[in-house]
Length: 128
Image (cartoon, rainbow, N blue to C red; front, top):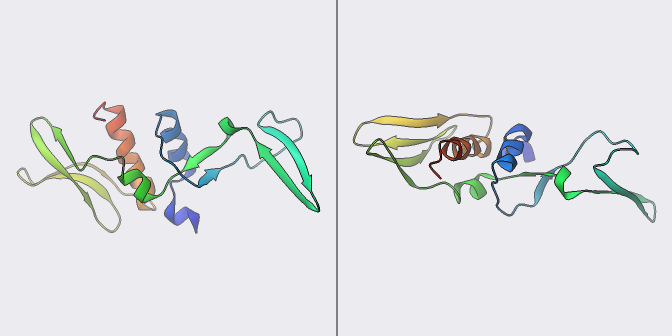
């Protein structure tokens, strides 16, 4: 279910690298665990349940569409043209009504990853 509502792992990693910060309750954790991994702080036993505690820097936040939309500008200006944020069923993009053209259209498996890639594009182009 979370794959449908949160950013995928690779996109989440890129967001983290670029400094995207929003509160989220969803995190990717390292999946292959060995006793010698430095990513693991400790293995705790609570009653009959085994619990792994991870170092914070080894966790990758995953974001929902709403969290990313809150960080995307509604309007951007590119080459003296105004573009408005638009969302369709499967994609997210900026659209210029005066020029009838699209800027940075992304269509991924879910809108969370699509919107994240749009945010990444704006960040890499120093537009935000």
